[in-house]
Amino acid sequence: MAYLRVIFLIFFFISCNSKNKDLKFLPGSNGNIKNITVIIDENDKNGNIGKAIREYFQKPFEGLPFDEPEFTLNYMIPQAFKGFFRNSRNIIIVERSSDNAQKKVIKDLYAKPQIVAIFSGKDENKIIDLIKKESQYLVSLFNQNEFKEKKRRILKDLHNENNLSKKFNVSLTYPSAYKTVKDTSNFIWIEKKISNGSLNIILYSLPMMNNFKTFPQKILNIRDSIGKIYVPGRLNGSYMITERAYRPFYYKSEISGQELYITKGTWEVKNDFMAGPFLNYRIKDTVNKRWIIAEGFTFAPSKSKRDYMFELETILKSITFN
Image (cartoon, rainbow, N blue to C red; front, side):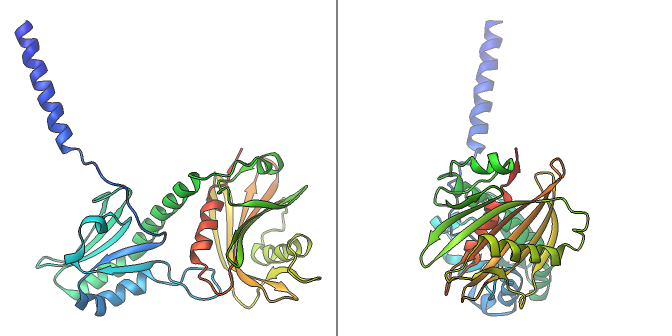
């Protein structure tokens, strides 16, 4: 019996060692937010395949006053793709081969977290067709990866707030760099200073209204009313309103199990020269028969605003009901 026990233990340890050898210890991924590393040879980069990648992965980021790409693309030839460069968080690889065109998506191939999309094949047109077909799915996948990464960075320096919980019975995850600049009975404004500008989040509640079905126009009118009362401009008599020259984007979604209406557009200041993008969340709080309005807006003159709005969107997505 003792002999059999020894044999069993030997096989057990051999099995464990074999499994440990198969484990892959991956480094942490790296890269700027909203960036994709594209591995492609120069001919394809400058040709139709490169054009297709730019067309579908650099569509304008929604809600900005001037066009900025959804992603920044960083190109690299296949021969240089090794070592540290393989740790990029988001990667697209174009491979020419004798096989039929195909697409693979591999998670955590060289680092973690990481999304690697591989387009391979011989026929250029078929590779382009695959890029077109799969681009919407991949854009969503890359964005999910970026939201997770941005939230991870925010959690490293988290603001310890409780006013939102006391006032609105909601929680929001945002960095300690944001400071409260206005706090009334039904309105909170927090702000993060940046060079020559600011990132801003405001929250307030509204009673549930049956006639809120005409939501798009009403939310813009409500924004203007709130801006006049609570969000002054730099000059006396100036205040934030909605820029009506730019048509906003509207979506219906869900957050924390609650009905969500999203508006992306552009704000301006009446009687002053200030403007920028905004992202407005209208959340249906059925239990308390009210709407929670959470909005992020950026003032960053002469600067790219995509990454600022992505930060604000990440923060708004974190809202939960207590």
